[in-house]
Length: 188
Length: 134
Image 1: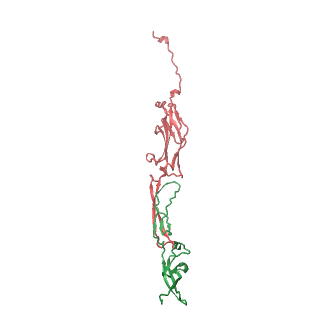
Image 2: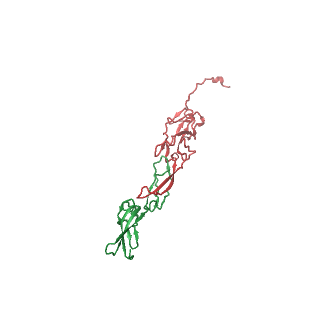
Image 3: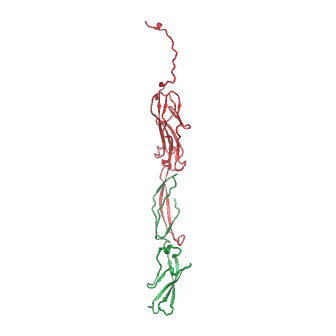
């Protein structure tokens, strides 16, 4: 598969004179014309290859310090070729992002097998942060968009809102208090 | 002929392709007695019609002269060879067309490229197109 469009081949068309009386002609004359055929790479044209996946990602809600939460599976990402099914473009990589960077597990991770995001963090800096972006990005391994601007890619974004565990404490239990003699300690 | 002034009529009595078969003398042509010229009907159809036309080649033609006013038939014959040249072998010229360049995306449906016909002179000559090379 050519890396770029425009690989060319020259086609030479030859016509030869004939005569209705003698076949082949005793002195055939030939003339030629030629034209170029440019072969384009389908992996760089979204008319021929596309990613299909979730049209949007759901809004996630997570309260730090409350342990891991795994959300519903997202729609699978597939690579579709038209009009023919082929594997000319190779494999693709699916990357989950949190605020534009690959997820690290805190506060988000993504399981490609189950297609599920999991939020888990004890970082109090996240408390009450709203509309934090998370994403799924797909690109062909051989044709990253950074290098091949016309290559297909997919990126779907969603947001995650963080709550405050204090709004709904994990536990709130009184501790036993020791009595004290008020009179004895009363300061006259 | 003596006297030389006596008018003579000429007719083609036979025409035979050298190494080939005889053809109808009448269809082969006529002899213009006035101008002493052998006349072949000039028509491209005479070339392209392989059934009734003139096959290129060399013909032995027998022309018979008859003294027009002779009381008794006074004739004599002469033979000559006429070569009909195959005007399309080779033709005067072939002018190729100028096909435009095309692009094709690998894996797309089959695409057809029509190459404009070449022109040939004389126009009634025909061309065959060889398998294109890449």
